[in-house]
Image (tube, helix red, strand yellow):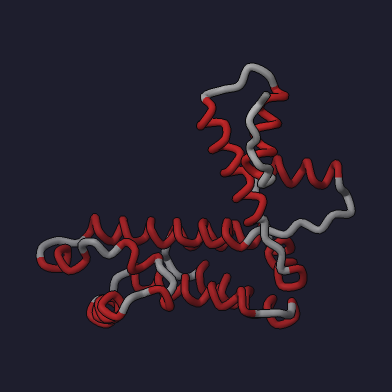
Length: 193
């Protein structure tokens, strides 16, 4: 979402549709939740701080990935406290519903409503996140039409990094390229005669 990348795409591929990857958008969203959680933690004291301890992943996990004890603990935390983190958690979960929309016509009003809510939440990380979403709205809404992800490319980049780290450098670029082909292309390793 950096301006430099967007400018390069617009300059070299003027007719391309930019689509922002779901993973990276959610990463920014989780960062906002975690900032609110840390701020809430700093303001707590006594028994409230004890109850709040070790809850980072409860706020960041998707609800369907929570185990029953985690679900109960999160439910208690949401019900007992009127902390900003609870508002942040509800904002996060409400934003996640955007990914279920398959039509931009339905997704756009939902996202505009969510942006209004986040902008008026008095949670600075969510206000910043909403500003970022507004600035990149077309690329985020394009996801509803195209539903593409760069997850495969990210996985390939990680494999290339592993190949590079495993070898501690290569003498020539040809050896490096051959190692990448073997590591990422599923080529068999054959002994050199």
